[in-house]
Image (cartoon, helix red, strand yellow):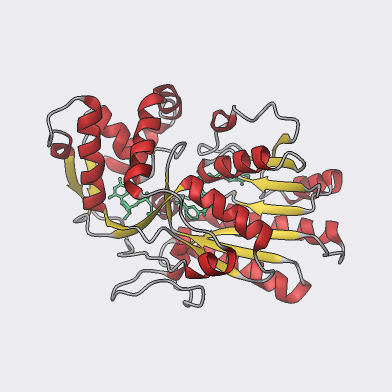
Length: 351
Ligand code: NAD
Ligand code: TYD
């Protein structure tokens, strides 16, 4: 069936993998990638599909309600996969308002435009909101996040995502907007902006720069390869039940320190350095304020109900990831030039 899908944030890390998957796998769908191109958005992430006839790029800011309404009127999208967001916890601590504007107001603007465009004709329509496991807060005593776990966001980033999730459910309840939500664990893979742990550390190791470990490095994250998240989004988009939430994760927990050691070892090998050389760069710095201790997703619902499961073992995924960054030095050089240096100094100089 022909579809007109609006994907927001498609020039970012996860969005670019989702856009690629949909453009290549569904040639009958028209894919509209809407992105503001903030510091995190980079059209170089999707050069391989930009010439495809079912791909279209729309530069717009989801905070601008008039622009968003006009685009819905012009293109009559029949579904939305909403990924555009401010996504970095550290930035949310220094600048929470940006997160309120894009993540909360931007999401409500998109739903208002969809609701007005669809005018009660909701058959075949879908507003798919892509969210995070961080809305559930921090695990301290074992256990996993289930879809029924009460929300308990602890950072301005997770509070803004939790707020947007609540709005999405409220629009379903109040206006019968056909929605689905997924909450995923930490992603890793190609094209991630090097403010996040894994690409930042790969780049620092390569440049023999200190590896700033927050606190004692004991915090635990559940890591999923980004292409497996994109595959899960494909599953939820096509098979998810309206009104439902699906948790997505890799059953792949690592303390930051153990994860960093894996990356260091692999980098030593690839760069021809003595084993143990890169680990010497580990530098303990002041902890992140309000640093969540542990995230861990129970992904049984999406596995059992929709038949999704991760395709890559972590060892294979991290190898592929490191190889990608080492083979795409120009990408790294471009995104770390300009304002990146200022960001890095302001984030790490005082730690
Ligand atoms: P990212 O920061 O790499 O990309 C965000 C994209 O959104 C960029 O292309 C940016 O230009 C665009 N954008 C930002 N503000 C915008 C605005 N006002 N209008 C239009 N476009 C705007 O983020 P990501 O890591 O790819 O995350 C994508 C989504 O997935 C987010 O909603 C995030 O909360 C969620 N998520 C991320 C992770 C993760 O590990 N990265 C895990 C679970 C969920
Ligand atoms: P990050 O990639 O920012 O993802 P999130 O905070 O959304 O989980 O960080 C992953 C973990 O790594 C988190 O516990 C914070 C830690 N971290 C560091 O120790 N040093 C760093 O420089 C960064 C960016 C993160």
